[in-house]
Length: 161
Image (cartoon, rainbow, N blue to C red; front, side, top):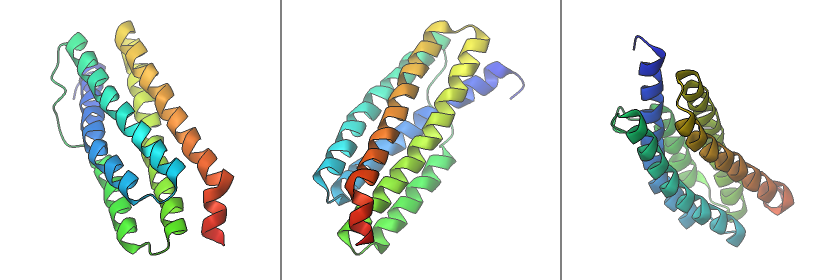
C-alpha cells in the first residue's frame, strides 16, 4: 500500500470480509442465546449485517474496486474467542452475558473500522461512499447500545445470581 486510496480499498475489503464472517457468527450467537430479547437483538443485527454487506458492495462499485480481499483476521479472532466461550459456558445466564460481551467486541471493532473508512472516504472525496459508511457506522453504534441495555437491564444480574 502506497497511498491513502490503497489503504481505503484495503479497509473496504476488510469490512466486506468482516461482514461476511459475521453473518455466520451472528446466527450461532442467536442459536445459543437463551434470553428472548437477546435472540431477537441478534436476529435483527443479522439482517442488518446482510444489508451492510450489500452497502459495502455498493461502495466498492462506486470506487470501482472488488469487495473481495484478504480475510479480516481481527474479526476471525473475535469469532474464534466467541466460539471458545460458547463451548465453555455451562450456565444459560452466563452464556447470555458472555454472548453480549462477545457481541460488543464485534461492534467496537466495526465502529472503529467504519469510522476510519468514512474518514478516508471524506479525505478522498467520495461523499456518497462516506454517507454509506456513516449509515452503517450509526447502525453499529445502535447495536452496541442495544446490547449494553440488555446487559444492564437484566442479563448481567441473572449471571451474577
